[in-house]
Image 1: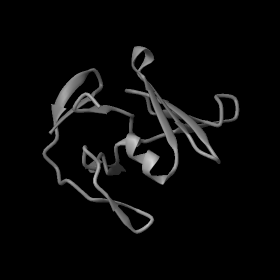
Image 2: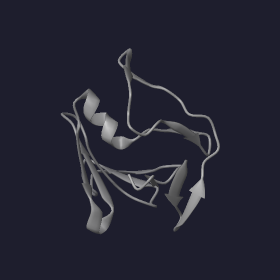
Image 3: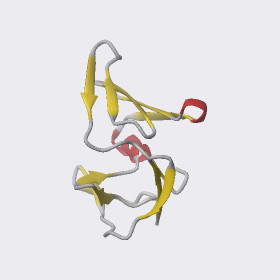
Image 4: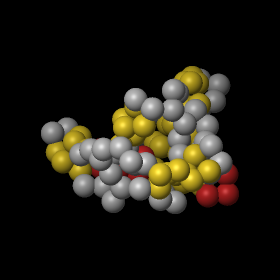
Length: 102
């Protein structure tokens, strides 16, 4: 499996995991993985629990909206803006990245 991050393409040779949300097995087109000791899942799968996900290719920006939160992340950035840039910013230990061009 190929991952794109830090400006390059890298091969992932680790284990592949199942995604379970609210005791329901989700079968995403891209499997969850462990990367730098963090569980990473395809953000598009958050739609399964009622959130809206939008990806803006020109700026490589991911927007996730739910009843409680609005989150904005950018590919190759480890900052998540929660409820607006001026509301709350979270420094993440792992960057958002593209997996298989997704």
